[in-house]
Length: 293
Ligand SMILES: NC(=O)c1ccc[n+]([C@@H]2O[C@H](COP(=O)([O-])OP(=O)(O)OC[C@H]3O[C@@H](n4cnc5c(N)ncnc54)[C@H](OP(=O)(O)O)[C@@H]3O)[C@@H](O)[C@H]2O)c1
Image 1 (cartoon, rainbow, N blue to C red):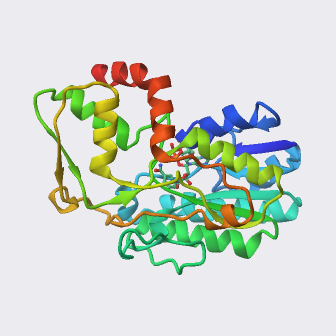
Image 2 (image 1 turned 45 degrees about the vertical axis):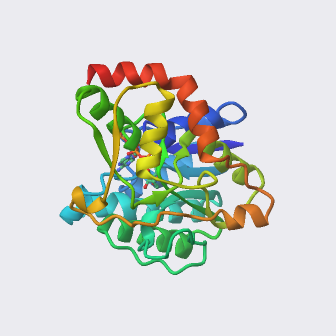
Image 3 (image 1 turned 90 degrees about the horizontal axis):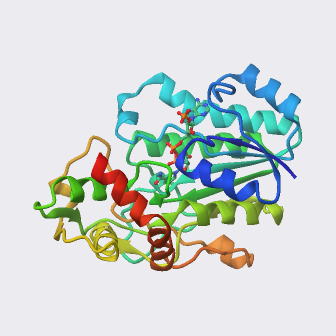
């Protein structure tokens, strides 16, 4: 299969590149080569590459900066996916688009998860843009897969875990305060990339949730990382309210992989199992990077 991958320099995109290219031809134009907000370029690229599948990991992912109401950010997060969906429809290829738990308001009581058919109700502009991107994909592409995911970590990118390590190793004597009232499922981008490939190879269609199995709080996630890496940083639970951010975040980020399970396609693993494997593989590298930061 020939796969065209957008956002290959990003956290999820780089692992998609690693996973897809083991068994398929992957063409991955950089942002410079193909800015997804440019309709003409999208069409030209689709014509010259002629892919079977387009996978869109490109997005503007700074959730707080999205509150700026910047037109360019809106274009990247909504008009880009629309261009790609319309282009894929024109060239009869499958379109795979990544969305987010932030399309929901997170007000369901823990431990109730969100299902694929729950009505979106975003509480941030980023969440609203991701919701609009989903609508643009469904309206424009007859053969699409939308995958909502959450709480991503990977070796190539800034994420919650890298900021925990930067704080822990930057202020060794200061305890780390981490929210114990926000729930989610830490999800390894490498595993998600394998899940995306499974969906593509099985010619799945529609909307799917894909996060690691099980859940925890941000506090439990941080504690697991600090303990597994043998760091002597104290981790103290606090409330999300102690660290106000510009964009509101959902307190309940639990997504149930119901459609994957019902169709026998779920390969997502328990969050602790994947996180332990990730830290075994990359822990030393992450600690060294954090010490230099
Ligand atoms: N991170 C999370 O926890 C999380 C959770 C739920 C859902 N998601 C979704 O998962 C997807 C991947 O997220 P990520 O964290 O891997 O993102 P990321 O690391 O921020 O990477 C974003 C990628 O998009 C590219 N890009 C940005 N603007 C572009 C444009 N106009 N044209 C072409 N490419 C452009 C970037 O290229 P440059 O490097 O050249 O700028 C980069 O390769 C996104 O759709 C995000 O909304 C993420």
